Amino acid sequence: MRDSKGRFVKGHKTWNKQPEVWNTCEECGEVFKVKPCNKERRRFCSRECYWENMRGQVPWNSGLTKETDLRIKKYAEGLIGRARGGVKRHKPKTIRKMSEKRRIWHDKNDFHHSEETKRSISDTLRKLMKNADFAKRVRRNLTIKPNKYEKRMRWLLAHLGLNFKYTGDYKIWIGGLNPDFLDEENKLIIEVLGEYWHRIRPNMPVSSDPDYREGVFADEGYTPLMVWTSEFDDEEALTEKLNSFVGGERFG
Image (cartoon, rainbow, N blue to C red; front, side, top):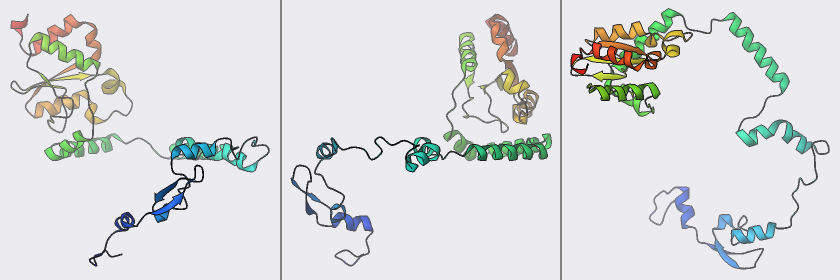
């Protein structure tokens, strides 16, 4: 469509320029203006008139049950899932077939990656994370906050007067890995490791292996210290470990 100057315009611009027409409210009889395309749909001048008109009307499904009405039965058995959660529910027979097919596939195929594949994926991600722009995009799409052990470590480091900064929010990457705490001046790194995620988790990725992380940081010229969450149970021993790590005779 074209405007008054002969230029092509989109439909919504043309719709805005359509002259309004008069319509009569079915409830109060008041005359109001609407767009021509809405003349059939706008039956009432206000929401109050709409609800007043609906007052006293009997719903179409009043008194109907799934035993007496096929529409109610279909809605109750299948479409109620779509109405509540946006997903259509499968029939029990279909669910059993899908579960059996999935079990057979898992028996025939090795679902988990091999050690060689995990190592390859880890090396590829390390190379990507060395790119500052790629690491920045990854951090922009994530919301990383310190967990309770990292918060305790941050407090302890501040209490001891150690010059460590929390970097576990993906701000800094070293060798494709993100350290938890960093002292850039002295090239020191402290990692807070959970027993499950870094020791006993099945199919643990290579990048979570403490020995692997320690080797990568050492190759980049940093001295790492691995602190397990279980060590926080004895804060005095942990303090001695931190002082020994930084050569902290002046803190003792």
